[in-house]
Amino acid sequence: MSIVKRIHRDLSELDRHEHEFKLESYNKRFTCDGCKEQGFGSRYKCEHCSYELHPECKCSKPTITHDFFPGSVFEFLEQPYILGSRGRICDACGKDIHGFVYHCWYGRK
Image (cartoon, rainbow, N blue to C red):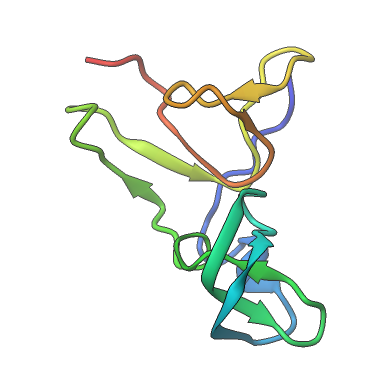
């Protein structure tokens, strides 16, 4: 079982980033360095090291809820929670998870 890196606002990788992020918008695709998913348009970018993040990844909340899963609370993780040696897939869309993720520790209610 891998170690779960939970986000704590004073200890997160984003808060330790040594350069400042600037919100910019380009009419081209990019791969978010947080969630590893494709993006287009607005992104936070570090001019010094070309690190790019979706606005939702840069300004993530420690926990969220979703109307599709009433009573569930999802916690933001910098790395996906992985059981065993298999990778992790999203329970909603079925895609592989490679970066930032919201995870619910309890089953659906």
